[in-house]
Length: 328
Picture (cartoon, rainbow, N blue to C red):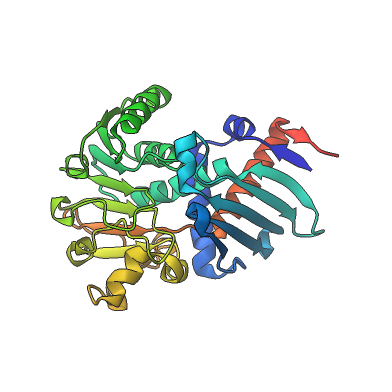
């Protein structure tokens, strides 16, 4: 069994690799080629946390996986990951666990890559300004994915904690300097989304974190953080302005995302407003962006298929490169 740490994974797998892995995973979802039951969610209200168990199996890849990911938002105040996790990779021909991967980093990569895949497929080609709302454990890969698929001049970053926002922007400016994009901390979400072509929200908020009226025509928005029915980062008014609404998995989103469940319940939108899953656009079964004036929204909650595909590709690259620790 191969043990793969964050540093091991970094040696062999980039955000661009993760974006391509996610695109493939999303096509598996729409083709029904992955057995991925909806995640088991056990609440830990004492700490505003929860334990999530996400199994998956793809027969044509002879691979299964199980991700254990625990969401504890207050960890960030202690300098600990807000979503500690491990991914078990399983040989589909024998049932033997072949690898244990740092699931926190796999999650960060594949979650950031979902926004990257959506922007690569749905955003205008000529994008200059990005906005990132949230600076928690998932934010760094969201930011890198955004600038990996579009040549942005600047990304404005906002978080409720200004000091944390400044520290994050400074750190990311150094880590991502090769992209040549300015990372700018700002004082409000209005300032962040002003004239932004790409917008990502990645927070645990239960109330909207941006004003829909401030979103410009032609913007593409990826909402990432609302993984439970009471959570709502998205201003529902954006859904009445959007030309198209896509999901990583409609089934998964409708099982858990308040971003969509709340406006469905109050009548802001109906299912007739849904466009479909991103995998359908990737496969050419659905049209994507048709002009540079459309506002397009992508809602992602994450599916276990992403973890499986990413983990398998990381494992294959690690074996080839001789990276990781063998646990006999």
